[in-house]
Length: 283
Image (cartoon, rainbow, N blue to C red; front, side, top):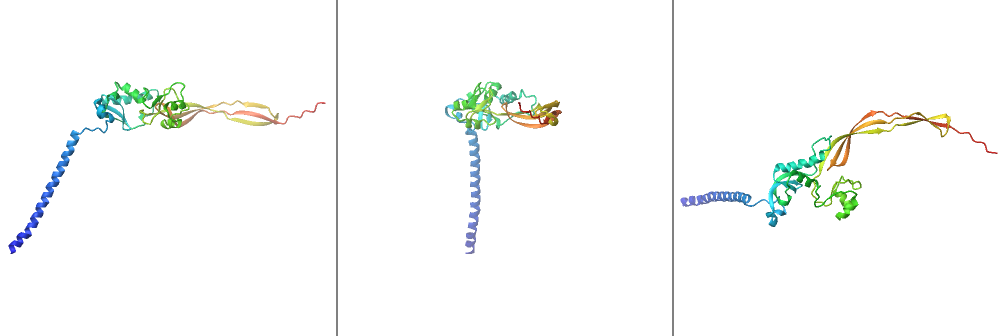
């Protein structure tokens, strides 16, 4: 009887050990299968998240691998090599900085820009960095972009694009629609492709300081008479300021320093206060 009880008490313990190791083996097999399935999916399933609509169907057959200039997640243009893509960005920035001798820092882009290797439609691949820079600046036109011509105004451009003047102004902050310059590129759609190059340059200009006028009353002179006792001379000051431009269009100025080059000299004028004698009535 005792031997049977001992055997019976040993069986549950043995079964527990066996179940413990079987469960651990099953867990290990499941984890191994998950790891293998992950590697298989990475190798066999191509990544189309960054290729856009052109990577499927008919578009996929017309896509090529290239180095794309990507802004805010959108492919703007592409070139065969990474060096050419970066050269396109440098060419674009240099086009706005070339006539700024007082450039304070390297031009930047308002949008978040990156160069990425991805599948793109063959039509987006530019031949040279210069061609790509022209596309990025909008100077070659494009969907949702309008290059201002001679005699055009904001109202006419908005009407042509089928939007209101208020909508056009919201799409182009920093642009004065009442004083458009020939060659400005305006967005007429929210999805328009255009990079905004920001430049900062230090400038100096001389400003004339008007001469103050001092008046001195004279009881020896009749009212209405004036005598210039000392001619005035305007002063001159030099103002140093930072001009911030977006795609070559000034958007704001920040004054830094003012130096007085020449003090103004007051103009002194003597004004008569003596009442004029009354004329006697004619007989």
